[in-house]
Image 1 (cartoon, helix red, strand yellow):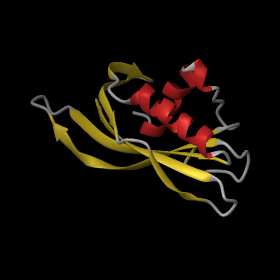
Image 2 (cartoon, one colour; image 1 turned 90 degrees about the vertical axis):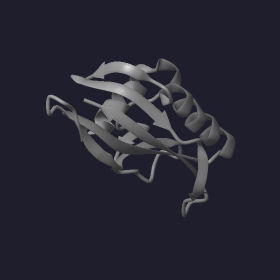
Image 3 (cartoon, rainbow, N blue to C red; image 1 turned 135 degrees about the horizontal axis):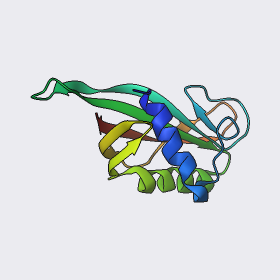
Length: 129
């Protein structure tokens, strides 16, 4: 099974309207200083896995997505578009892993970085097997 961030990356890349390209403006676990507008995906804590009756592992990992932009409105729109794309997705297989459901927190302004760029976040709760 892949790290959840890899599967989420592929979901975002499949959405043409987001105009994301891996290692150009979409990254996993490492947010570079440039460009100004980027999306970074982090694997984070979730909930303990559930064992099913046949001892198959039913995972409940978490993912944290952060959008950074020098333009507040551009950043807000991008995190909101990602939220709308991912929240409520269900019964999809990505890279051999079945995602039963994805739920997201509401988009939130997180902080300003040292270069005065706005950063927004959403937290994802995943259920996969």
